[in-house]
Amino acid sequence: MTLVVDASVAAKWILPEADSAAAAALREQETELVAPSLIAAEIGNALWKAVRSGNIRRTEAIAGMEAVLIWFESLFPIEDLRVQALTLALDLGHPLYDCFYLALAQQQDAPLVTVDEAIIAAARKAKIKVRRI
Image (cartoon, rainbow, N blue to C red; front, side):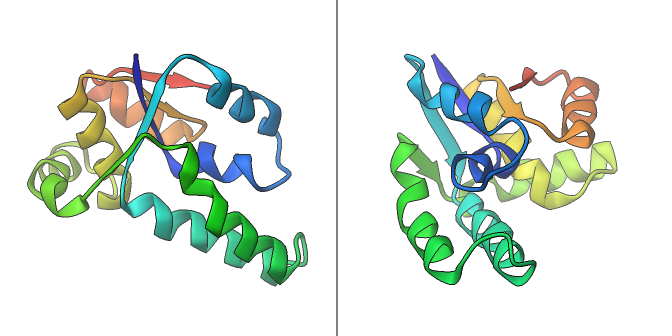
């Protein structure tokens, strides 16, 4: 089974947050975890914020950035998802960044795994499979 993982879940693999244990358990399942390549920038931004707020050290952020992508079977180029993502963004009135995850879930006919309530609502509106960790 393939699962599309968004940054709200993947960030929990390296940052001490609520639901980090549930996010980590996702990696132990017999599933193929995939994401749009945009996830690297979004995780990097979450790490940057965590350093700026004093929640983690710079060295931890860099180590986390180096390690986080190893759990993905595949990263899909956002260039290949751009038209589908923009179409979803326009149809749903939802930010384009999130729609790259929705587009990939739609393309792969795979559930999107997230903790973001706004994305969950958008996915349901678009009839895209979605689940909360």
